[in-house]
Image (cartoon, rainbow, N blue to C red):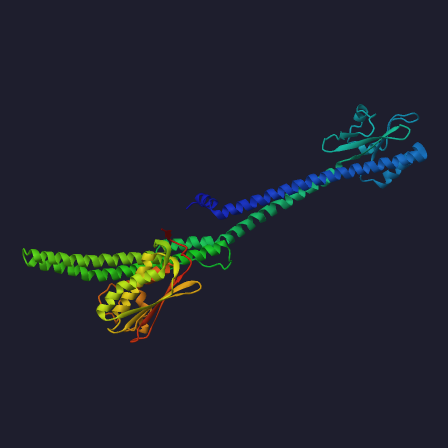
Amino acid sequence: MSLTPRILKFSKTIGFKIAAGYSLLFACSFVGLTVFAYVFLEGTLARQDRLMIAGEVQSLQEQYRSGGWTAFDSKVLENDRLRKNNPFFTRTLPAPGRNDHIYFPQYWKDFDLSLLKQMPSKAVGQWTSLPNHTGKYYLEVFTASHADGTLFQVGISTQDRLAILNRYEESFFLVSIPLIMLAAGGGAFLSRRTLRPLRHLIDTVASIEAGRLDARVQPTRTSDELDELGELFNRMIEKIDLLIQGMKNSLDTVAHDLRTPMTRFRNIAESALQKGSNIMAYREALQECMDESDRILRMLNMLMDISEAEAGTMRLYMKQADLVQLAARIVDMYQYVGEEKGVRIETDFAPSAELEVDADRIGQVLANLLDNAVKFSEPGSVVRVTIKNQPDHIELQVVDTGVGIEPEEIKKIWDRLYRGSQATHKGLGLGLSMVRAVVHAHRGTVQVASTPGCGATFTVCLPLRAPLFQVKRS
């Protein structure tokens, strides 16, 4: 890669734009401040020169009043001794007993003094500027008058003022270049340091794209917005990785579980074909195939619902409902199932339990818990369903006195397609996975406590406030 494309690529980066913008802002601010200081200094020096001229005019007027032209001349000579470096220009204009006279004309050889005679000199209180031969600086002259009306002029050269401004300009050029370079370096350093978390994020995305799914953004511990973005990205990747692993495990399990019904499909069809043109055999085979297909579809639909709930995308149709009435309907349905097995279902409900839920989904939760409780209970035992109102949630409990759950299986029962060691009944192994997924979608919790041989207690807590995501109100 040649140098020019690299420079073009670098010039398009955010770091370069920030550094360039910072340097440009600093340079403009520095130049603007310097120009303002130059104008201020120039104005201050000009006012200072005019104030000195005004002071000299007042002093000469006082000397003239006290001793006439003799005192006036004496004051001019005294000022000459005191101001050798920057003397005052002094000129007396023609008056009775006084000729046109310029004091110390040798000091003003750089100026064409003959131009003074061509300028109007009768306007008292006026300023006149006389350029030197090069035109770089001027002689500023003020016309004043004595009490008797006689005129005189006092001035000063702007050469010293120009020298000070020139030194200021030289200092500006000597200081500005290092400062601008320092600003550019500082801008590059700050932009690189500030955008370091973004660079880590880009590197992490590139690593993930290359197949390293375990790559994570390095935390900077700065607690700023970019550090927060990195933490959110890591949490998002961990969640995605968890979902991918769950999906992979589910697909493996589904593939394994589909092998049996698909084999049954083939065996049923093959057996029907071997019986020849027997209509009844074909009818029975088709019926069995329909039963198997219904079981497979039910399993796939439940897996999709669980996946949506775990991903936070399950659509909940929220409405205000009385959990007591909902539970009463479910219990009435399972009373018949319990009677067939000899299991009695008892209830202990609060008078009412109003909250905002998806009634169909919560009905599924209670139905699954009751179904398991009846299945794993011995004839003659009791299943108890209770509903209690708590300050910030409603508590639903299903208690059975069945075979219970082994301690090592407590965490596994929530996994998809898992059937415990005590499972002797036909099932998909998705009921408890669906229970947990729906309850979590409602921002609730579900827990289990069990002692092997003494039954199990499932406790569902549903918050009184509605979930904040994937909510549709009917």
